[in-house]
Length: 213
Image 1 (spheres, one colour):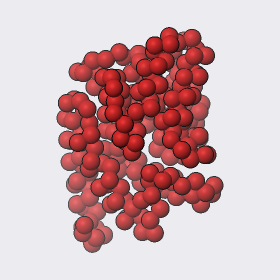
Image 2 (cartoon, helix red, strand yellow; image 1 turned 90 degrees about the vertical axis):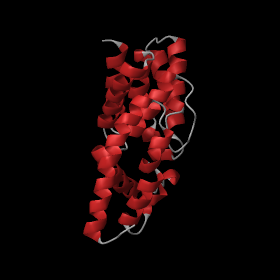
Image 3 (tube, rainbow, N blue to C red; image 1 turned 60 degrees about the vertical axis):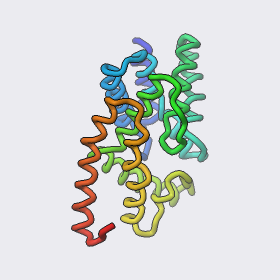
Image 4 (tube, rainbow, N blue to C red; image 1 turned 30 degrees about the vertical axis):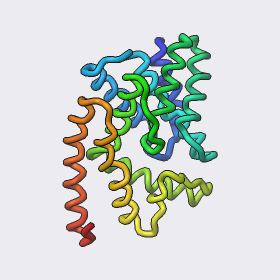
């Protein structure tokens, strides 16, 4: 079995019970989007796929302890790839991509692979899937607060008394700012279509709830 599939199996096991939207379906959508962007933008495909598969591997530790899953993920990825005999340059590149992928941390991507991973991860917060993920994630974060007391400081809009208020706040803070923070032209083309879907959804939501914003 090659290192890509070995990594996929490892990540699947770690995220098997992941309650939020950083689950295996998200991981594989990000991987597929990375491959799609790579076809136009270039970069090292193995490094990119490994980084995509491992980029959220630290989310379980974040749920348990708080902190930054990108930093945790880079550490876990380094340990795992080292145990698989990966080249040190590949390991350093993959962990660098993981450290800079998070939207909320605003870190600058230094390589084309890191740029593509950032873009692919952010695109998964847009469109129909983006709406679905945001609502599932809000529910999961509220549940984690009630059950084990974990509060995600970068997602305080998940805890509003009225969930609609939190959802509208989230949309303004993340999805509608993503276009200005994409790195590649390929990602921007994809984002335009997905953002149209989100605007249409919000327009209908405002009509049905009578809550114009």
